[in-house]
Length: 209
Image 1 (cartoon, one colour):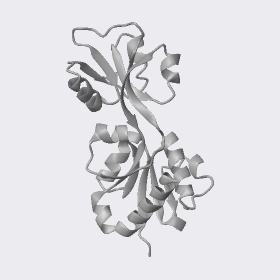
Image 2 (cartoon, rainbow, N blue to C red):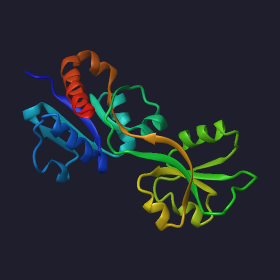
Image 3 (cartoon, rainbow, N blue to C red):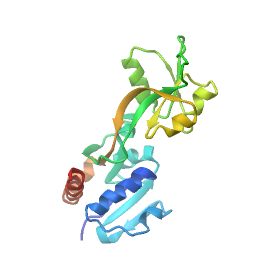
C-alpha cells in the first residue's frame, strides 16, 4: 500500500496555481477540486490528502508534522521561520514585498510607525536600513493604516499594484521578490522519502519546462 501524503495548501490564488502545476505533473485531481469548500480533501487515487489552510498556517502544519508537505510563499517562510525543508521553488504566484505610503508624505522623524502583516520581516528590513521604527501588526486591510493616520508606511504584498493605486498609495521601496515554495517536514522526508522524492521530481520537471 502506498504511503498517503498529506499536503497543506493555502486557499486562494496559490492554491489554484498549485493545483494547475500538480495536474501538469500528471496527478489526477477531481474537476471540482478547486471549487470545493471542504477543508480536508481526500484524493485516494493519488494517495493524497490535502489540508486547506490560511497561508500563514501552512508552515506550522508542516513543522508539526500534521502535513508531510506544504506549499507556502517565501514571505510566509521568512516571517514564520519554521523548522521545515524548502525543497523546490515552484515559481508560481509571483509578487513582491514592498514599502508603500501616501505620495509626498515624509516618514515621521520621531518613532515612525509601520503597519504590516509581516512584523518580523518588516523589523529586520528597517533595522538593516538603520531606521528605528514602531511596528504595528495588522491582520487585514493594511492599506487603511496610512489613510487613517495609524501608520506612516505599510509593508505588504504587491502583485499588480491595483490595490495600492485604488487607495491612493504608492510603492516606495521594493524589499524582495516572492514565489511559492514546496516545503517538507524533516521527519516525513526520512520516513516517506520515495513518494516525496517522486512528487518533487515530477513538479521540478514541470517547473523547468
